[in-house]
Amino acid sequence: MEELKLNYYFSDMENFRFKEIFKDCTYPWEVLSNINEYIKKFMQNEEMKINKASEIGEFCSITGNYFIDEGTKIHSNVTIQGPVLIGKNVEIQSGALIRPGTIIGDNASVGHSSEVKHAILGNKAKVASLAFVGDSILGKSARIGSGTILANRRFDQKNITIKIDGEKIDTELDFFGSIIGDNTRLGANVSSLPGAFIGPYTWILPSLQIRGFIPAEKRIFPKTEYIMKDNEKVELK
Image (tube, rainbow, N blue to C red; front, side):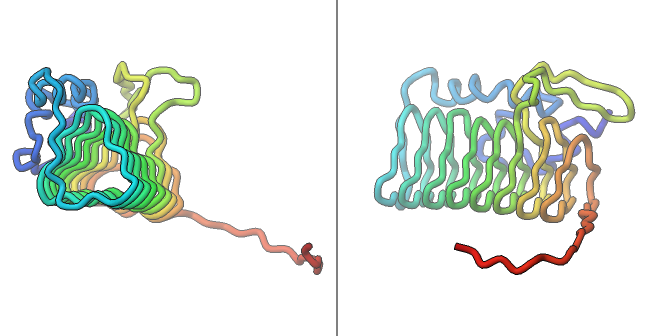
């Protein structure tokens, strides 16, 4: 099932700043399972507090172990909870929360008051404001619109399963968000259910709820119908 393999979604893994995370992995959930071990290996099993950021705003909190490469700009009121790995020339805007197990590639950005948890952001990936990205992988130049939620846990808290062509596969993970391919774009206020797979160069227009597998190079439109009735005049207090 080629639609489940890493190389269906990501074509430029070799140029990713932390490319070794993909080594010996065939499927995305294998990568997510390896994040903590990879970060530990990167830090050589020792405490690491390397911060080469070119700019750190006021009232930031950076705790735990971390590697932050040169050229990165951290705006005011940002919270970073290690262990995390952050590449070169990354922009983390005010009020953002970067939680443990996050790996961010070069030239990526995280918007105002967005939260990223145990996720991988590819080179040039962008998360806009007020978004949540949990236990997910974003490919090169992927875009996540404002207010978008990549949900990462089933309501019944069971393992996340994926169904393609009638075949159901258990990821053996109870936290698993979305896999977003290279150059894919999710509009504002999109919500994806746990285990969503979206191929590269696909656009999801605003305000949609998505689930399951969406192939590469598609454009997904919402179907909106309004009910309009007369409304009496009420003076508001």
